[in-house]
Image (tube, rainbow over all chains, first blue to last red; front, side):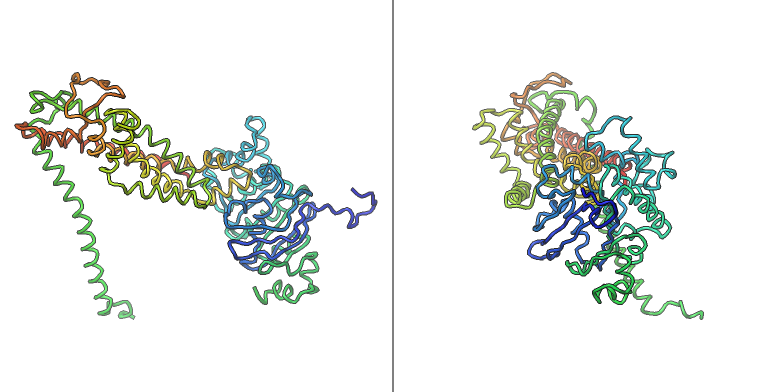
Length: 262
Length: 297
């Protein structure tokens, strides 16, 4: 967009723009008008204790919040400059955003079909088109070497750590521009967690990542910027270095990242 | 240290209470077998003199006082088959809508209420409804069609309820995983929900076979008759608009309406009815086991 020769704030492309987002379940408001941007090819960590609205916020991005009848959303969420609630093809929106849930969820299908499911849903059915996608995604998720000889065995029969990587492969299978991970490591062992973190470091070259996590140290290891969400409001959003350096503006943020509360 | 794990009086009392409880609960469970064994045993002993393949394949003779039950047996096959052919697709598709698509609004709450209450309507009321709606209003007359549709309406709510239960047993996380990658509800249902609930759905449907086969009033009011001349062993004796004989009605007739019936005949009829129903239930159990072994999580 800009002609500026040197990298500067002008080069930043806003992949996601959230402004004045309010969300209520029934009469109970859980997001109180939050505004933030996610820049292209950054890793934005979202930290905060349980019940802060982190997961609900993610569900507003890909509009799976629509499945909750009692939810009412106001404010705007833009993905790639387009308001998600004005998009006519919500399924295309969801394919632009990869979503990884906290608990590893292999679908009760073969490993191959788990990864091929999303492309098939969008109309890709030829084997010659599907096979490279399946292999690429499984490689990206660091699972290929372990499962390449048994692609037709059940995804649900894999170990928890493998299933979580399968979930990531599935989330990548529809070539998303944004990858959202919602506390991906709470059900898996530290070794697998480190492997997935390595995967994320590689993926950041080509994708924008929103990393919701309860582990403040994980956020510190991986992210460029960190957002601290508390009880449905953004306490602070800044460069991760700043948040963790003790120079955070809010005392709450400093206490939280130091483990004093939360 | 020896005394540390020794029984205290308190523990001894608990153990006695535990074994009394186990004994009583176990005895009550075992008692459930007794009525079944007695019923089946009594029927088979009384029916023994006439029980044979010949009895099944032959037609009633000498004013229903002798011979077999073939017309009634085939009639029941027709009635049950056609009624389930109607109620299964409607029931299963309606259940998929209610469980997978329906939002929680007044209309769908009304549908739910209707399903629950329809399941509680006594069969004699269904019979009267079938008489009014199908025999007279729709002008289907006293026929297999009217009787089957009446049975279909009777089995429909139960099929909807059991199908919904089977669908609801598929974990929500699977659906959310599908939605997250941009699958429509239908793609989700087809790829994940149906393959993993089909055993429960089938079981629910098959259990309605026995219910439809056993009901007397609905078919008596709408299409089953006292006697119908049929060739011995003929598999296709009836047309849709014909009246037919049915096992349940035949049993009622033999037991209460016909004088000088050979003593074993009603019992043998009951054995065939019960035997068919138990056979179908056994099939349901095997199908369930077979499909459950293929379950994927």
